[in-house]
Length: 458
Ligand code: IMP
Image: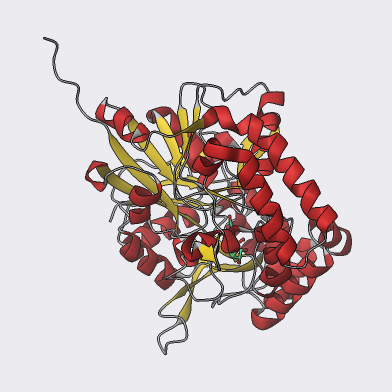
């Protein structure tokens, strides 16, 4: 008899701020060390971008391990599926030579985003700035189950059983909400076509992932959104509709929690938020929030700001709102899926510390350290970082010496600017967790791993 196979394990990676922390590039970076990359929450509301030599790869539902051919991909039951968007994403990847046959598995317990969900989200979600993908109404129907005598929630397994009945029922339900019949018919037709492309990837095996782990597979769960947008622990109503905390990976990812090994957190050196809700360190405060909300409604984004402003001139003004616009432009802080300008704020260390504590994070990656170079162009010539509880008497700004963009190393061998080293050393102590890597630009080669040493390991 051969030796017993050693079981594998799972790590969970989550965003620690308000989404858009650059989780996908960290997943892409770590993927070679895992056998499976799995999603456990959310749906097409996630916008995950990986920079490749052929330009940015934008993913919404497919896990960010796609660029590693040997790595399997799993979409767990905690996710909701937009059939058309997922089929389009699979086709887009195939057009780039990335075939998912045999690599991608989707749980048949995933709930199905219906036309009525998308239409309701577009109608009502604008007030809180949702992404308009029908995610909230879909999770709501899953919990509601019935309306009168009719089922309102469907999972992929209902499609496996009797797809014609589900598509008919979906059309009828959407018609009841008073939406345009032609629109609904077109959406359902699109879903029917998409379903033929998705069907081969769907499994009815509730322990598909568990089997792999028992056979030794190493899994990385990739969180969507962020712990601050959790439906329960974030600030209602400005949250997403799923559970984003790492423990939920073992519910929505279909694996017993006994296989958990460690939790990885991803943060950014400046913060950003799309949609409404508290952002206590926002540059320009309520003015920035109102400006970004109006721009999102009017469809104004990157191109409009680039045409109207010179970021270096804005930074020289020394005004907080202008600094926020400039950092958005220089750090490219526009929504991946929606193109909306993101609200930009200073690094909030108390928020980060609390998120790390609540999510039980073991180690941290800090993206967009290069964007701090913008502060070299401000009149104060220093990097402001906020410490102390939001709104509390102890909240204050600490100022660190600035460094210019020219000081950011291009190769792996060159040293980091001393000012950045000092800031990272201080931050690791302040958050009480080691910094394992930093982002110095969006490209793959611009991710710098940090050796465990006394500077970045508290
Ligand atoms: P929903 O998830 O589309 O319902 O949107 C609810 C809130 O979560 C809105 O403020 C969205 O902007 C935000 N949100 C959802 N997905 C993401 C994401 O991937 N990155 C950043 N914010 C997100």
